Image (cartoon, rainbow, N blue to C red; front, side):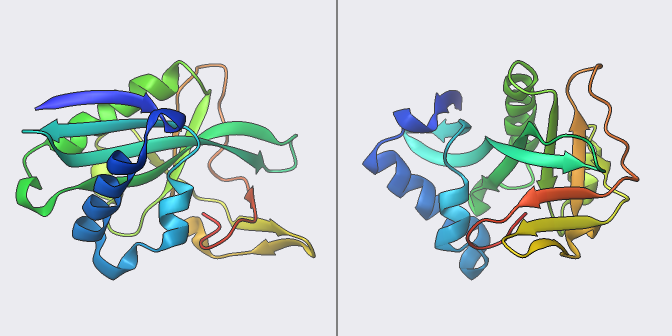
Length: 177
């Protein structure tokens, strides 16, 4: 098994096609074209076994506001997937540890949204967001109810967002978070 780290700009057609196939296998119809688009624009960790992509996670830059503080750029984790043939063998943990090391050198804080995997991320040091979440739309901030699945990882000791504050993201196509 090999792990490679690549910027989105370095991922060409066949690799992007293989990633889309992985996401379809791992998530079925729960992974939309918008979800796929959200995975690009940052750094990727890709697991390859016998020239086949079997795992992936990416982190992209996103502007987030904690409470009423200034907006800042953080890492936002997208498209964490392991091929069903190799799930439950520790590959997802390994991929996320590599991604966390990559993020640590680029951003002070990371966030993600998950529904089913909170325990997986907590074991990797992530914390559940306790405050309300909002999406900044053209009409202003709207409470979006995503806070139940939001998680944060403190990558830099100088960055210490209070998990009880509100958190706001900018609107985007598909799921805001």
